[in-house]
Amino acid sequence: MKPPRVLLVDDNAINLQLVSYLLQAAGCEVMALDNGQQALDALSAGHFDAVLCDVQMPVMDGCELARRVKADGRWRDLPLVALTALAMVGDREQVLQAGFDAYLSKPIDPATFIDEFRRL
Image (cartoon, rainbow, N blue to C red; front, side, top):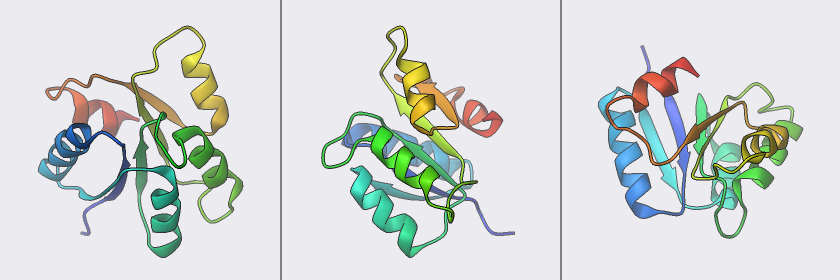
């Protein structure tokens, strides 16, 4: 059986390292990128089983990426999970309205992260 391919997008190198490590330890194949435009290019070039994406990034933020992904018929059913530090009232709703299917808040707890991700 092929391992799940996860596209991980975050402009923070430490977050990319930690989450990549956790996903790989759980048996996932991970492509880590640092902005939404790179993610859109990667989606066009390959197949992924899920996208885990920060919201606030340079070049193209996560909400714009989510809108473009969900507007494109090729990826309408691709699970798109926000991984963000946005935690103010209304942030969750704004992120979900942009097209994300689920929301995980930072900082992550390495002990529970994979179970939370799989549940989503």
